[in-house]
Length: 252
Image 1 (spheres, rainbow, N blue to C red):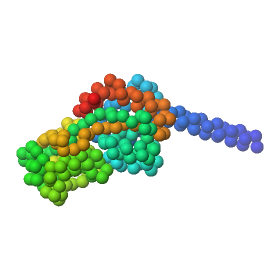
Image 2: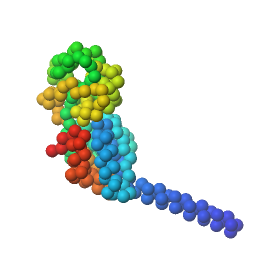
Image 3: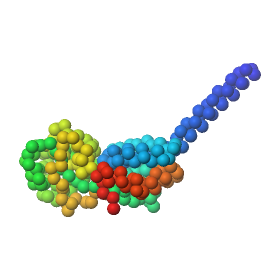
Image 4: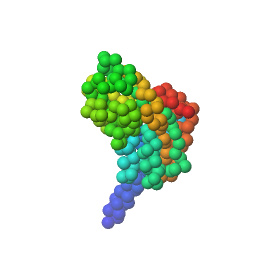
């Protein structure tokens, strides 16, 4: 009987140690939910931050801003949310899922049309000569929403209706152009700068769409995470700004 009690106490001690170790491992974890177009810049930023903050770890989730907002609404773990437009940040704010005082603008971007086509495409009206055009789904992808604004304001909605190929996020839209599955795609300047085959054919006139800005905020749970708050504050500094500019973003 004594042997059994000792055995059980030993098991309990081991389980307690494992639980404590697991809690300690998660203590410095920050769950990031960010627009797909920020992937490379954020990967570098989190790497730089981790070097000067031992123990800090990141769980990163990159996708279309609308998809991320939906995940957060459904209870997905997220300490920091970075959207590619104001719409989805406002959506979560109305749902009381982000910490309102922490909302600010992280960076800005530009919308471009990129592709590997040999046709001379230099302006919006030239798009009518193309067969297939990549665009992020406007319902959940900010880049797609900006593109549709430009298309409608240019009076090309009907002319391009049968040519648009929807993508789940801006990176997939760029991939379509890279693989030649479309003649060109609407993407951000920062995405196009990383392309190997697709080149920027023209910059979409800024007066045709809403300014592309990236709002960032702590979620309600993130506001209680000291590591998330620390990283959010670090994003305002010189190191983070330099990295964003390196990848083509504008910081004002």
